[in-house]
Length: 276
Image (cartoon, rainbow, N blue to C red; front, side, top):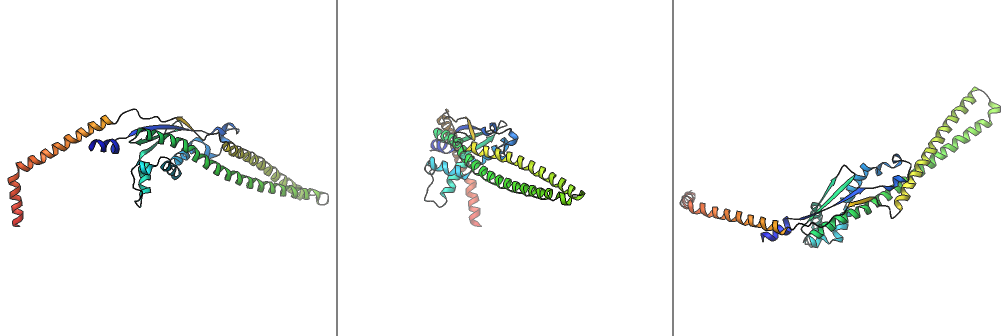
């Protein structure tokens, strides 16, 4: 019994997959500075960590590997879903490294389940992260387009004001109108520069969106796939079981020894207790 308990409830196999934060889109824009902030390595590491720990990932793993059955959870129990999620979370550990990589380690009593779950997490994290990037970037592009349109309208308005002022110059030519023309010119130049810069930013944002829309561009690279743990747990289980049996025997023998050794004293203590 102790051997079975240790082998399938305490001791587990461990498998680790390593993923690298990747964004091939940076080769398409002029420089890394043109990338949206959330695509820079530090922010992407956090985003991938969140994807791995997300509810979408948990639901996917529970369904794909039928973890209700694997963990022996009674599905008629009112809170069985919480029990499955708790066991799944306890089996997964994440570690960020200084090299923009994340180690995904899965522990499970079955070696093949451990490595399959680790590799599935590494693969499906890319799917979740891609969905987030596409949704977020689509919103960014829409906002940039609206802002650029507003800037272009403001520029057109200032240009019309300048044209109207210039048309009236032969009639109202004086120092006041000259100052007004110069002021409008400065505003138009400033707005023109803003529109030009914003148009380039929008172009970069669209490149990001179009690049990540390509099905063959990963947001995460699997640097090292998990492999089945080659060590056997039967020998450690047998050793621990033997030690448990020895310890249990010592406790039982010690108990009976003291019970026999101090039998008379115990009788006296009981009789005094009964008299009270």
